[in-house]
Image 1 (spheres, rainbow, N blue to C red):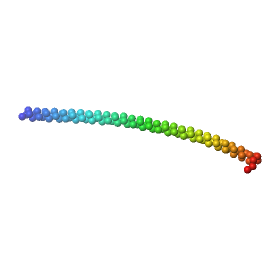
Image 2: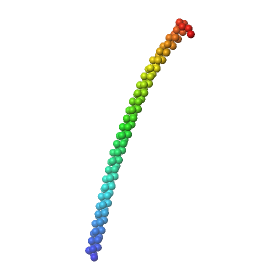
Image 3: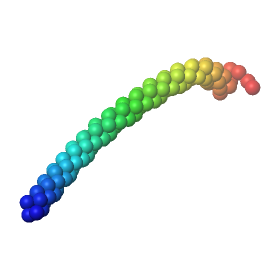
Image 4: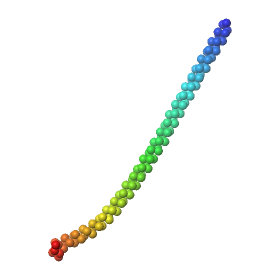
Length: 106
């Protein structure tokens, strides 16, 4: 009977040891999974950040190109408008000069 009880105790002790080993393996697996998850999350976050920076840079470049295009068009329109007004101003100055000098009357 003592031998049976001793064998039962040995089996129980072995079972407890196996349970502890299984718990240790489970902890190690969980820790590895958490570390892998953090690493993957960091990599995904870095990729998203780079993609966002590229999108912002592209949008900035496009906006700058549009701005330069608009400034160019405005400058051309300004020059064209100035040429038209320049002729009108020259005519007005000439007429004013004639009026002041008495060459022309109202």
